[in-house]
Length: 495
Image 1 (tube, rainbow, N blue to C red):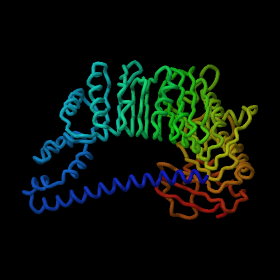
Image 2 (cartoon, rainbow, N blue to C red):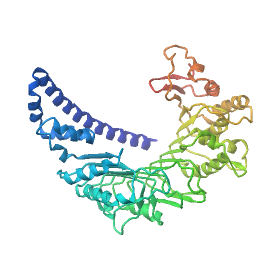
Image 3 (cartoon, rainbow, N blue to C red):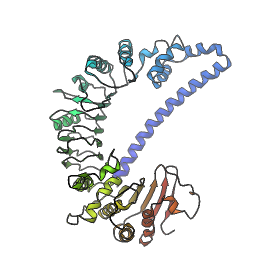
Image 4 (cartoon, rainbow, N blue to C red):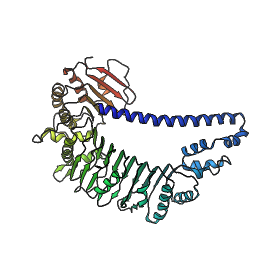
C-alpha cells in the first residue's frame, strides 16, 4: 500500500512541476502581450513598433503556441515577423483537403530552424505519397525531433499501409513516438536512448511480433509508458517487454469486433506497475507470463454497443465467453493493490456466481476496488462475486453507470437484500471507505440534511439497499462518500 501511495505521489509531483513550467511560461508571455497592448491602446500608430520590439525568444514561443496556419499568417503583422515561421519548432499538420500535402512539403523545404520539438502528421495515406512522406520523416529526424506522431487515417482494412523507414528507429533525440496505420518491420539494429513514451495504433507488426516488441523495448532503456491499440488483429500477438526494466505503464486496447477470434495473446511485462486492458471481442486464449510487479490493474470491455454483449454466438451468449476470459486472467493479478472493473465485466460474471458453481472462486488481495455499475439485475451477481473475491478490501468505490435494458430471469430484490447483508457482515470487515460516484450528473439537493438518498442514486434502488446494509457493519469508523463531478460529502456510517 505504501508503495502505491509513493508511486502516486511521485507522479503528482512530476505533473505539478510540468504544470508549473507551463504556467510560468504562459504568465511571462501574458505579461509581454498585455504590456504591448497597453502601449498600443495609448497610441495605435505604434503598433508596428511594438511588434518590432518583441524579444525574439518570446516571439518564437508565441508562434509555437499558435496553430501552424496562424503562425504563418502572423508574418503579415510586422516586417520582423515575416520570416519567423521558418523557425517554428512545433509542426502540426492535419489534412482537410489534398492541397495541404503540397503545402507541408513546401514548408519543409523552406524551414531554417536547427531543431524540431514536435512533428505531428495526420492524413489519409496513399502509396503515391510515399516519397513525400519519406521526405517528411527524413526532415524530422535531421532536425532532431523529440515528439513524433504519424497518424495515417484509415477507413477500411484494405487500405494500403505506410512502411516505416528504418532510420526512424535510430533517432536518438526521440522522447515520444506515436504511430498509427503503418507496417512495423524493424531493421537489424535499433537504438532509442531517450524514448519515454511509445504508442502503436492499428499496426501490422511483423510475423515475429514477439521479437518486435521485445526488440523495441529492450533498445529503449528509458521507456516508461507504452500503449498498443488494435495491433496484430489477425495473428497471435506476443507482447514481450521482459527486457525493459523501466517500463511502468502498459495499455492494451482492442476495440474492433473484426479481429480473428482464433488468435491468442501472450503478455510478459515484469516491470510494469500499471496495466490497462480493454478489449471488445475475446481472442481464443490469453497467457499472462509475468506481471509480478503490477500494482494497479484496469480491466474493461471497450467500444461496444450494450446489445452486443448479449448476442448469441453458436449456442451461447457472447457474455459467457467474456466471463471465461475474465476468470482466466484475474488469478494472474491476485497480488495487485488497485483493481478497476467495468459494468460489462461485472455482467459477464453473472454465470460464474449464479450457475458455474464448479469453478473455484478467484481470491484477490487488492485493498482498493473500483466497480463501474448501475446496480441493475444482471450486474448484482457479478458485484457479489467481486466483493467475495476481495476479502482484504479497504477502499471500495462504485462508479454508477447509466441504466441499460437487460434480460429478466430472476427476482433481484430478494436476492440482493440477502446478499448485501451477507457481504457487509462476512466479507467487508476490513472496509474503511465506501464511495458512490455519479459522473456527469448533479445532485440538486446537495446542501440539504438529511440527504435524499433515493434522489442521489437516481432510481438505483439496489445501491440504496447496499448503503442501508452497512448498518450491520461492526466497523464504527466506516466512512461513506457520496460524490459528483463537482462536490462530495463524507460521513460516518453510524450517522
